[in-house]
Length: 304
Image (cartoon, rainbow, N blue to C red; front, side, top):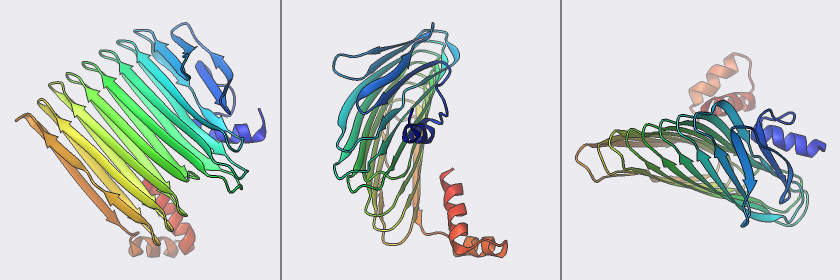
C-alpha cells in the first residue's frame, strides 16, 4: 500500500496493517483485498457493494470493510448488507477516507443494512475523514438501516471530525422485544462545511430501549442540522441527548423529537448548544497551556 492509503486506513479503521479476521478493503471503486473466515463470509453484490453473513454463535470476531478514495473525481454508491446470526458477538469496523488533491468532487455514498438476530450483540464503528490540498470537494452521504430482533443489542459509534465538505447522514432503526440500541455520534465541522444528521428510531417491541447521544462542534462558517426522532410503539424507554459547542460564525440547529404511541412508552429528549466556558480556558492556561491548546484540549475531551 502507498503512504496515503496507510494514512487513510489508520484514520478510518485504526489499521496499520492488514487486519486479522474477515476484511474487504475498497479503493477508488475497486476491491483491493478480501478475506472471509470460517464464520464470516463476504461476497460481492451484483448492484455494487457487499453481503456479509455472520454465522450464529460466532464470538469475538471482527469484520473490517474500509473504503478509501485517493483519486479526484471518483464518485460511487455502494449497498452493503450485514446478517448477524443469533447468539453471536462481533465487531464491524467501516468508514470512508477521501484524499482529494485535484479540482473535481470525490464522493462516496453508501447504504448499510443490518439484520441482527435474536440474542446477538453487535458493535459497529463508522468513521469518515477527508484530507488533501486540492480544491475539489469531499462528500460523504451514509445511510444506515438497522433491524434488531428479540433480546439483541446493537452499539453504534458514528464519527466525522475532519475534512468532509458536505455530509447528509440518515439512520433508521427498528427494535424488537427487549432489543437495545445505543448510538453515539461525534461530529466536527469547520470552514464552510455542512452536515445534516437525521435519525428515526422505532421502538416496536415490548421492553425495547434506545439511547441516542450526539455531540458536535461547529467552527468558522460551518452549518449543522440534527433531527433525531424516537417513536415508542410499545412499552419502551428511550433517551435522546444532543450537545453542541458553537464557535466563530457557525450555525447549529438541533431538533430532537419524541412520539409515544403506547401509554407505557417513556421517552425523554434534551438539547444544548453553547460556547466554550471561559473559566475552563482560564483554568487550563494557569496550568501552562496557550489559549489555542486549551481550546483543543476542551474540544477533544468533549468529542471523546
